[in-house]
Amino acid sequence: GLSECNSGAFDRIVSTYTELASHEKVLDDLINLLRKGQLDDNAPMEPLKKAIANYAMMVRFHFNQEIASCSEFLQDHLETLNSGSDGISIGLAKFKENCGKNCDEGSELGTLFADIELRNMEVRQLSRKIKRRGIPQDDSSELSLPKEVQDSLLECVKTYEKTVQFVYEYMCIVHEKAAALPEDESLLSGQLEEMSQDVGILVFENDTDTPKDCLSSAFNDVIGYLSSFLIKMQEGEYDCKPSGKTKAELPYVARAKALRHELAESGSVEEKLAAKDKELQDARRALKLKSEEVAQANIRVGLLEKRLDNSSKEADSRVEQVNKKLEQTNADLEKKSREYEETMDALQADIDNLEKEKLDFKKKLENLSKKSLLQDLARQTSGIGALVAGAAGKGGVGSARGPPGSPGEPVQVVIKDSPVILRQVDSLKAALNYVKNENTRIKGENLKARLRALPPIYVPPKLGSAPSAISATGKRLESLTKINEYSNEVQSLLENINLLSATPQVVNLTKPKAARNSFREVDRMATLKELMKKKDELQQQIHQLMASVHPGANIETSFSSFVSPTFSKALQEKITPAVLGKITIPNESEDKGKVYPVTLRSNEFRRIHETFLN
Image 1: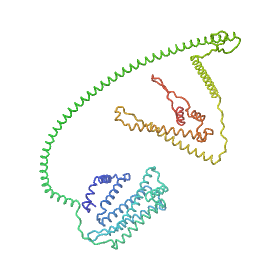
Image 2: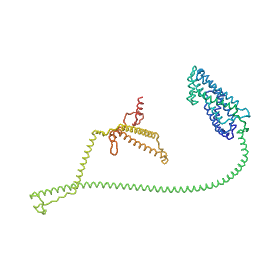
Image 3: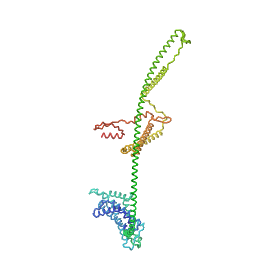
Image 4: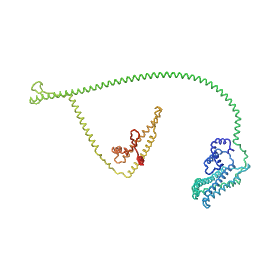
């Protein structure tokens, strides 16, 4: 203990006084309750158990290497056994007082507690005999207990503690149950035996044996060990001669002597302190000189800073002048640009006027060409008529080789078409071709419209070899597996979208753009794009799966397969949400009401419907 340990262990224990104080307060509270006569079964024992466990841990940690007296060791454990015997006696007395009527002498529970009482008396007698025989009254003899014996004694005490714990826990449960019953009723023997079985399993951690067997085994171990220990002690096996060592002085006395020695040495320390004070004064003088030098350096720095301010002001003035020149240059540039725009507007107006004049000239040219064409046609008809008349007068048709002025001879006339007429003919041909193409296009559109108005042609599926039952089952299992995978992916995508919607991020416009956290905005936009891409891919995969399940919805070619347009159109019509109804909410404000479309699932629509019905 603290009276026999060395000064190092004493210092370690003193350093943990703050922890020990809280546990000592628990013990003080229990002692005060005992003095006032208020200590009963309702007092909490958990703080006391924690305090005992803490003290035991500190003893093992700090005093494990210290030499302890075997006599005191034995006396402490015998006192523990006696205290346990007293606790068992008190518990049995309480049990007889509360439930003595229901435990007959021949019943199993009555036999159990009678056996406990007898064994408890044996343990108490053995501990008294060991105390009278084993603990010496003077310094003429001492005890020497080997390590194995000490460990066996500790194990014996732990075993006995289980029996004490059994009696205590059982009495607490019986008292609690009995207090809950009316005054004219009491606990039955079957209930008492069931409670003893539960407490036995809780304490001994053995659900195979009965509490009687567990207690009998524990008492047999304790009584057997104490009997053998008493026999060996009576035979003098643990006696030894006194070592003759003087008793060590108390640790606090050793600490006091060390303190006196330190006080004696403090005189030399004072001389050293005086020398250090003188050195400190010299250092202060040197520091004062250094501070004066630093002050002069600060003055120089101040002058340099003033020069720097002046130079910065000059630079600022130069920058202002340059900015003014730049602003003037920008103003001149804007003025020249406006002049350039005005000039371009004027030129554009002139170009427009020239275009109008050009169109007028074209119209005039066309009119002139038409007039010249009419004149040429008139001349041509007149020349042809003259030729016909001359040929009729001569009585034959032929070609005259003579001069044109000679009478009676045929004249060969060479007719050439006018270039204007040729151009007009070409333009008429082009217009005719355009009209033909336009008629063809209109007829084609009419035919297409009539085809669209007709009902769609039913295309039967291709007749092939009937798949076997095994392949059909495999396809069905594969489709079910894909459906489960896609449903899990849809659920995960919906959770991510809900999480993104539930955690909006508002841009702080009060901060400048450079101070904002642009990484979060970029990350959020990247997350949105990734979710949209994942949604599109998942939608495409689901459409392909639906097309593979429905017959005739998937068109297979030599190189690939794709969804038929008819099935895709029908699928889009099916995906479009149907309007099931509308809910009108009264608007008491003067503002005009608004329409909010809401897309619901089946369970959500059912919940809203039940809410309105209730």
